Image (cartoon, rainbow, N blue to C red; front, side, top):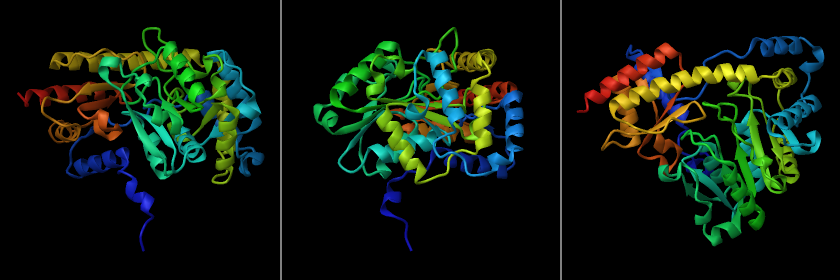
Length: 390
């Protein structure tokens, strides 16, 4: 017995590896602080939980859910896009509900790319962009995100031969793992490029509601004619502290939304309707004050980390979005070596940048989704570990 050849192309999934490292240290009796995964530590708002309880008690919701998302969910997503971004969507033709963005990103890749096609992905990036292109049999073209360009890709550097065969271009701002943001003119350039070459622009805005110092992230769909070639993924996981609920949506280009929905309907039965009802309650509840409260907490934590890094001698710009800090490894260490060093010497888990792509080598990622006191303790341990390197 053997697994399929396509499985041999897959690297170990980053967060499974981090879980293994944590378990090893805990088995030795160590107190390990995990700053590796971006999983909000604050609870889902009470009114959303209550909406779930009420919806779960309704017998009608105990049956198979709508494959593509309930009409109420798709209407709520459309309403939110109109309210938040000024983008008009046709609920049934231009939205589809997802079991979290990860599922949708994977299924869209399988629906839109295959052998002979090229998928253009940023590097470093959320690993699912890369792994699903490999599984679909497509060729991957890596578009470097460099600090000297504020971690924005140079769209003009993509070779013509790649553009001729490309079917998808992924962009992700606010960015995981770098915390970078994209201005409106970047999206304008991306839309122009993709319209010129008939490429599906795939925008992932999972962190759109996290912003500091007055920053509010735009949507790629705000650009005129973007829906001609763009699809966007909006998740409730990060803004509403609902990672475990697995609820998101893809919106935009009708052909891409329909293809994604068709593939989904052949592979799953959709999101539990009670969870969809709770998502409707979340989006219709005027959540801006809740987002502001969350962002104040993350900004406080961001400043704790930035102060510690500055004391160590690491000077990097403070990110205006996401709950990640992307910083260089100690001199002479690879990302993997540095991550292992901090686990062993500080009992703190930080994500190695190389797990997000070749251009992530030499970097580490800290997540701010940790109790504030524990975060302070973790940074004190990291500072002490740096001192032992001298």
